[in-house]
Length: 559
Ligand SMILES: Cc1cc2nc3c(=O)[nH]c(=O)nc-3n(C[C@H](O)[C@H](O)[C@H](O)COP(=O)(O)OP(=O)(O)OC[C@H]3O[C@@H](n4cnc5c(N)ncnc54)[C@H](O)[C@@H]3O)c2cc1C
Image 1 (cartoon, rainbow, N blue to C red):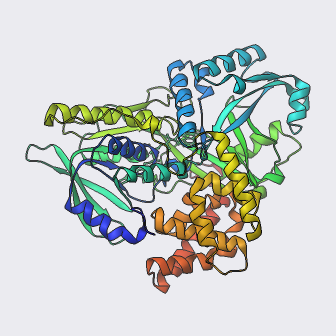
Image 2 (cartoon, rainbow, N blue to C red):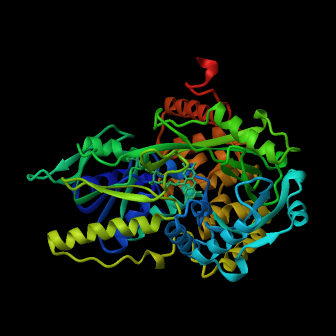
Image 3 (spheres, helix red, strand yellow):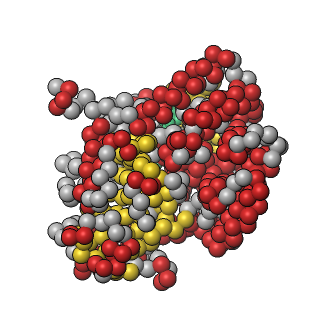
């Protein structure tokens, strides 16, 4: 069985893009572009989406992976933002309950910390109201004793109590890919590894498409369309500059890093949002075999195509943990993986990275290029609605064409259907029983359902066709088969990082399966031996970069 998003169909997809005319071309296959493609296609527009690398390879695989109401924005009095993202998260949870799961967050109250007891209690209550949190899920304030019982690793003599409140967890890259797949159900044509290099202009100088390059074959071609939206995240200004429209407001890029340690080395019982001595707050989030910690927030002016964790980032996060969880004594050697991403924020004069608003913004050039940047993973659906409304208005005014209103709040995201969150648990328990005789168990059932929902069935079916004795290898091979045939996987980073999250959450499982996975990829994608060797080198380099850090060019030790 081959889907619209099978890597085997790449030549047909490219042919379609080059030969047909579209209503809308979207540049960028992060969460913002994916959301726009789904919104526009589901209103009846004929949509193309190009991504220069892999889907979600920019910021959308490097976030804290929370679908959250943005408690910290309350501190900055961004009431409307808290309200909007809070309501959105409830919608996204309903549309993809397998992929967006509820997660309690512990907010310890620390002597001289960011929030006092009264302010926290009130703040969390306001947060619950603004975010429309259901009664059973609303915040609870815990005493000092209850807090330490829940989280005995906390520094005893500074904890004064805590608040326990509702958050949601996701996998950003999988959410992006599932939205691209959902858009395909409405006939959006999306492709990765196609870069928009320039624009096509009509006789009046108005943008009427893009000139692109297929990054896998080096071929160039044009895509013609009525309108073009750039959702290129940190690259938005680059495209505005190619379009000669980079004036007025511009982006400010802030780097955020997460480090990963084995859960055994930092065995928090639940997610914790805690104070750092410099006045910031960071998360520690347990996830399967690991705990991840983040994030930093520092101005960035280096290579935006290769953003790495540096030693200062790791030192900062390790120190922050050791400060409030003193018995843990995390060290550099404990870090097994990491990721670093760029927030594409809108520059505000005189404000530091942490102070700049996370609001999104639309730029429209005189020659018709629409760009959208800023915002949050959580708000992707609203961002999409806003910009597609703008496109629909243009269609109405300029072409007397009408499209449906936004209705993405009713479109389940691929991986279901699940009528309610409880059904996800029932399915997971039932799957765990079914896969037990195959040498898999609860961990794998949880992993499969969180990543693929009911699509796990395709993977389990394929699993049974491989004959390897190691069930973990069989599972990875079955997932790779699914990724290539249903999710446009073209290389090992697509697979190990963005489709399965192994690089971040199970890095140790990769080395023993590299060779068979590369052999399968070579067979599916007709790779030469040289290509396999090169791919292996690149993968090993990516693994090293995830846990071996260097000081940044600005570090005093390098002066
Ligand atoms: C450290 C960190 C933590 C965060 N945590 C959270 C969180 O927990 N919850 C939350 O809601 N939000 C969070 N965010 C914010 C959220 O991750 C971003 O707002 C969101 O991912 C931005 O998505 P995007 O699609 O706009 O950009 P991107 O994901 O960067 O997508 C842009 C895409 O455009 C492509 N592109 C660029 N140029 C071209 C071109 N010429 N042709 C074709 N394609 C091109 C890029 O390759 C890229 O894939 C976090 C951000 C950071 C950095």
